[in-house]
Amino acid sequence: MKTASIRDVHRDKVSLGEYVFCGWVKTHRQSKNVSFIELSDGTSVKGLQVVIEPSNPSYSKVAAAISTGASVKIKGELIESPGKGQKYEFQASDVELVGQADPEVYPLQKKG
Image (cartoon, rainbow, N blue to C red):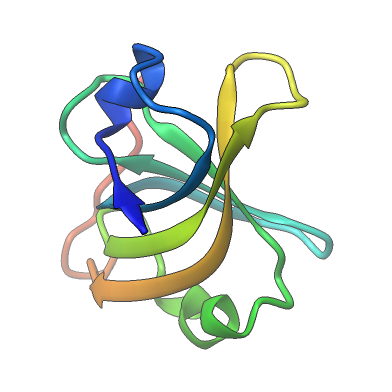
């Protein structure tokens, strides 16, 4: 599986397909039908939107521990985004929590 930087995604220097992205969680939103992570790897001010099915077994194991600042490794497919506001999104097939950022100890907040 290929790796790429989020900066390269935003500069159209990668092709669509399967990738592994590692980085830090900027935001994590969950709903009944779909979950979203905005991922940052430090190479761009813009993050990468990761779309996750809540029924995904690897995500189900770590969902409760994912918070702003947590480090993750996500495998999946980079596709053109059907939504407005971004050109690409990343459909996750495997989510691994590399390191937690306990919000009680590290009260990180989303910036602007």
